[in-house]
Length: 145
Image (tube, rainbow, N blue to C red; front, side, top):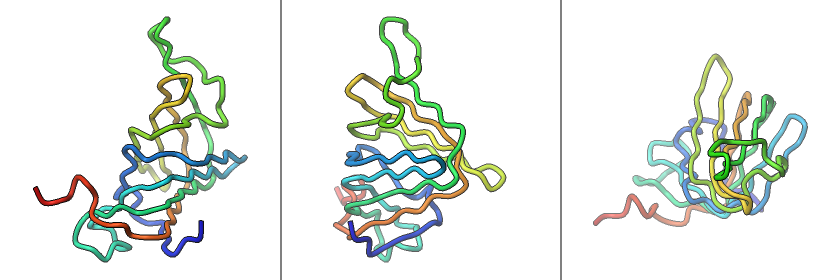
């Protein structure tokens, strides 16, 4: 992907609900998440439009990653267990993306589907860079009704 846009600010204004994952690279201190699309909020300084926008393709790079925990829901035990494939924790769509900033640090929670079942992927990082190639129109949830 050749990114035309990039930002490392206001990551909380990006929405990843239903974003399809096309690639994950879990490194020692950097994790890259490539998505078919994402959404950027209308209040983000990198969004020149007056509405939330669909952006494609999109990549997120998490810097200085640590304290990773990948868990898979087990129906038989009714609890989360360690994931069998921690280097590819989610292989379908992201359903939940939660970012909590604390003292120059970020706590990330990504939840979604893996062929083995429902997954929660948690980690801490110092910063996030988001890059994408194009604005592709108004986000479906921001369209006039």
